[in-house]
Length: 345
Figure (cartoon, rainbow, N blue to C red):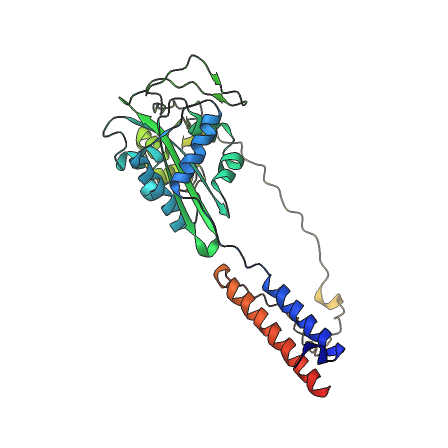
């Protein structure tokens, strides 16, 4: 059948149907989570670092393995945390993977996680405070490692960046006299040789008997607990903390609560005994009994149930299937409608 021989109303309907199906085919499907690989993360951090006038960091395989293990651990427990398996911190994990080859190691760590989060989001949005900037812009740091773990069904990505150095490494132990302005408002803290982790020093008991430890740079709850010969669980309980909580330099951790002094002295004087006053009451004979009432039976009204809304949750991985099914159903429905119209005409 030639197109011109088709009546005008049918041609209009065919054209409309074609336009509808074409527009539906252009409907975008939900995008899948995209995450950079660890080497892209390293390149992004080094680009930020060199942009501040600092040398790029060298990739260290031990730090790469350590950082990747922490990203994998965060993805496994669905939580952004510095605390690794077994309560380990960044330095302990790096040393366990061989960083420093037995020499004293100093490691600083940045982590981030989120839906559709990129490494540039982490660097330029989440890591712009002094602690996170120190990890990326520490003048004493020489090496870097990175890890990336993504949960496709949740479009959620976990990033870990570890930087540091160790005793004996070429260029390690860099010292600064005072602070260094990198030209962007960030002032690099003074880094002295061997000062990657502040020494653990026991705090003296206060007048009320309490012991409060001020967290130093690089210190962990495990190290604090070992210093005071207590268990980590006691510290968590006293400070209303969880094992996954992160501590920062300057935080005050209660090691021993204050005690309540016992007041001693003479007993209080005896209280005066009062003689009760008897008030005469009316006898039963003078009281007129009140009439009794039989309560009416009541009928409980049946409540009309309130309809509740039903929410259907579609997981991200099934969204493309659902959208495709909807598009096909709409196309079939339109075809049926137009087929019936053509029969009548």
